[in-house]
Image (cartoon, rainbow over all chains, first blue to last red; front, side):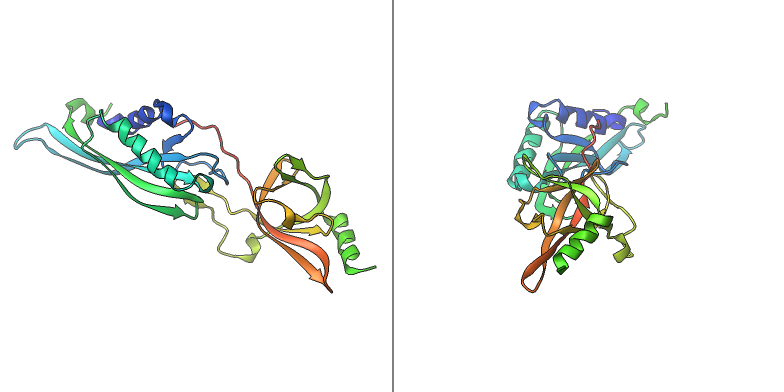
Length: 136
Length: 118
């Protein structure tokens, strides 16, 4: 996966899996109005942390450690057990993608969104190609 | 003329045409008053921003005549006014001398899901 298109690639990877066809997958905090009643589940992705450091001493090569959050929102009517089901399917989708870790926290209820929320994060670690760090 | 009829007459005079929808059942159009509630909470002017988008706090006070019992409807019941839809957040009955005078409630404007991509 490339550093500068990582989020897009992740979103497409999830969307292309048949399990997620009825689940909305999108960037976190979009500049549009949220539907009042959620009719389906959502996964929102965003950058959680990134660290770029020299790969070796006196080297121009860089390695990147990137953590992306993928928060799972499930409507009240579906029940919080759906959060776990979606997370297990996220694990399945990412199993063969070279991630260094995937984790989930505790399920909570988000009053503003009116949905059950499971916060998850996915970590990547890899060597950056030089052209990825150069401006186009 | 009793209080129930006086209030019904006033609602019919100044109210807006609305219908109730509960599943497949739709009421006949009738008049009700919807009054925005943001004035009552001075801190409620701003929208809140959530991970799924901007949440609008569009709450209204509903006042409807005793002919339309909103408390008997299911949790999924909706109020429609023109092109706008509202969900009931709270429903109550106002009585005087053990007789229903009018129904009141808090409704919230429904924002539908946009078919947006990434």
